[in-house]
Image (cartoon, rainbow, N blue to C red; front, side, top):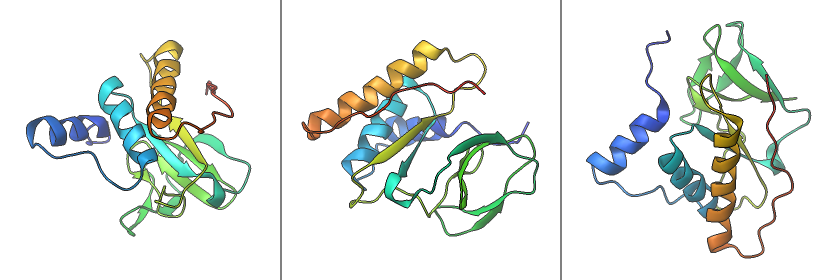
Length: 153
């Protein structure tokens, strides 16, 4: 519909076919990326310290704009699923995360969002979030999960 591939497919190709390694931005990003590769579920990670409540999930009208991780301004396509906080769009399925809430090496608290599209069960999403938690706990024994929940839109 949007003439884009599912982002996880590109990540799998990058690792499996091109021999690239996991990104070394932070262990939080590596944990998220490893779970994406394992479960094939698109996930966004955001630095909680940069968020302003409320965080919402919505479907784009095509008027929403934000700055992507690359620094490029992007207008969302109508019908794209996205999350936003009081400051604006944080991530969309088609165009990915913003540069304002991105996880850095200094990030200590993170919000992981899994985009569970039609055909993906609540159990698959729960297992995926548990995998992220377990991967984080491998490198940070004192990491704590505050909430693990599914919002049905």
